[in-house]
Length: 318
Image (cartoon, rainbow, N blue to C red; front, side, top):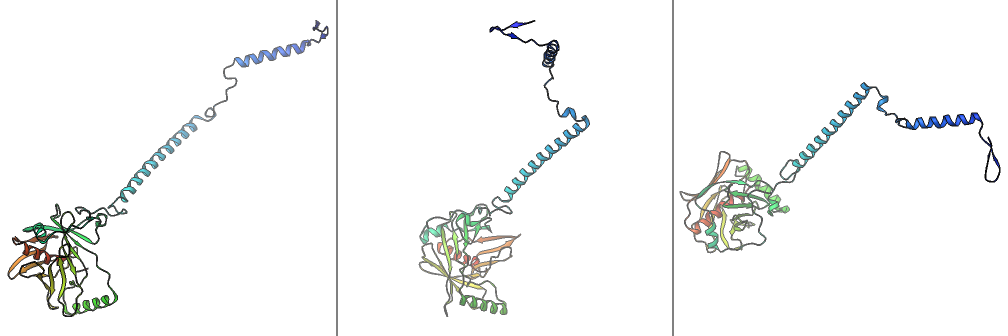
């Protein structure tokens, strides 16, 4: 059959075989389009045997569980590290001292009568070194609590002043002589300043070592915070194991005697302040605890002198 186009030409028609092939192709394409999985890519797990697939899933679950355990362990290790580095812990900085007030920014000057009224009297309490870092409270040296639970006062021992060459040689000679004669190792020549503080950290009394001159037996001077003299600690002969504490300035009281003592931590020791047969104060070790006793001191001047004597116990030793 012949067709004519609009221009009058004759268009060629496909032969019989070509027409059949075209029809078959169209029919096949239509069938393929109608099949739902004709263009779907096969799943990978469908190509893996079931047993192998289950083992893989179990292995993956094991890996995830191990990862979770590692994360948990890591968190525990990090937490332990933080605890070990916390203040007061094994690898951390020292914790702030407990029971120690912050160092006052400005000194508080009191009169002799005001200081005497604040001095603790007639008590027996435990005395122990403050636990923790006193430097974080603004102090140097060592601080002792007079009454651990609620301190009525504190004793602070300043660091030793650095020695000059001549002082080192003299100190070694003194130690050698004292060792030969068997005298007490601690001496009031040790340059420790000792302060008695109120519960707020203000100075009540200050005991300061002095440079000894030839024939000068004064080894310590005790004063108020403003430098007003209260007492002097006088050395006897080298063989004496005690010091005499005499009043100075406006203080009116009979001199007292005090034992030499080195309040070294852990060392059992005892000392006392006395006048004649009367014991006015003492410090003793009972059941590994150091107990300080101050008798009933009714006179203000006597209370000042006894505390001036007791401060000597923190001034000797290393």
